[in-house]
Image (cartoon, rainbow, N blue to C red; front, side, top):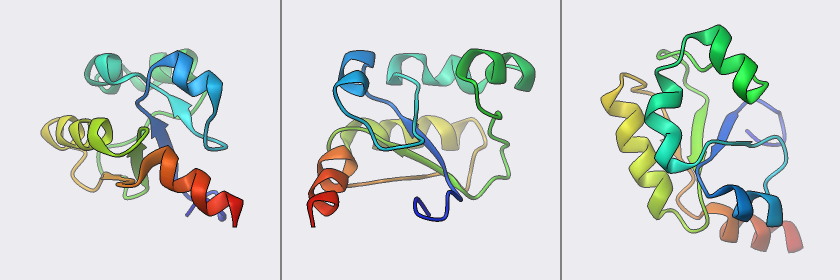
Length: 102
C-alpha cells in the first residue's frame, strides 16, 4: 500500500517522535487529538492536516505508532466513530524502519 501510495497513513505518535523520524507520506495526528480530529468537518480537517479527510467507508486508512500499542488504541477510536474498515500497522515505525534497512 505504501509503495503504491494507496494508503491514508496516520501517525499517532507525539510530534517530537514524528519529527525525529517518520514513514514517508504519513500524517501526524497525536493519539490524544485523534478523536476530535476525526470528527472535524472535511474542509477543516484538510486545512489543519493538509490532506483529504478520511471517509468512514474508506478501506485504506491505516494508523501507526512506534511499536503498535497506540495505533491499536487509535484503531479502536476510529472503529467506534464508524471508520469500520480502518486498520493499524501492528509493527509500527520500528518494523518499517527495520524493513527499510534491507
